[in-house]
Length: 261
Ligand code: NAD
Image (cartoon, rainbow, N blue to C red; front, side):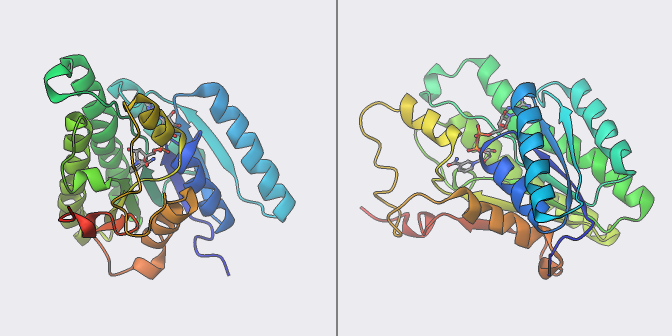
């Protein structure tokens, strides 16, 4: 049996990468999914592919799309309203969209610091607040799952803005969980390690020399998109009904190995 039957989900950054994997997984589990992204063309193509796959399975789930640049607060507000209107409410919100850039701390331009905080942290706050207000008003026992990173739980070179944004997501998740628990809304996060995705490949291309991404990962390999999507599914589903405020690490043991020489 499916685990998200009839749940209405909004997933940000879902035109490609991990967000797309989460969308596919949620749809297979019976959820209706609103894809939100700023890559308009990719979004349309992705939605069409997902609808086609659902039809082939004989499933009647729906796929909606919203074009939105999450770094622009006015667009976030409009997108939230549009998604809510689509099915008259949202049960599940996944704040997955994120950006990163490798550059030394002393070289980070203020504009890029702001952009990364805007997309990774501020949009997560704004969209979550909008949806939580709606869930509370309608008495919806919703769940929110945020995309953190192992980089939100420990530091690293040349990603100070990214790491700070993801550390913010971890603490925002805990704090929202406490404020929203009395309303029956659960809030959790997922902290992936190195996952094989387009963003990851872009970062690898930016890195100078050979980056041994897997050298300190005890499991000795990159994670797959499906392995991250599985964690989102679990935290969004009723199987996690007593779990709120937690950050689930999906990193092949990378953080557990932090003291390795
Ligand atoms: P990706 O670049 O493949 O996907 C990110 C998606 O977010 C894209 O579809 C992109 O268009 C969208 N997006 C970016 N900026 C946006 C904006 N301003 N408005 C709307 N949409 C926007 O990256 P990914 O690897 O799938 O990463 C997804 C999330 O997972 C990110 O938050 C990332 O930080 C996190 N993460 C990734 C890894 C990894 O190894 N790939 C590890 C840990 C955490």
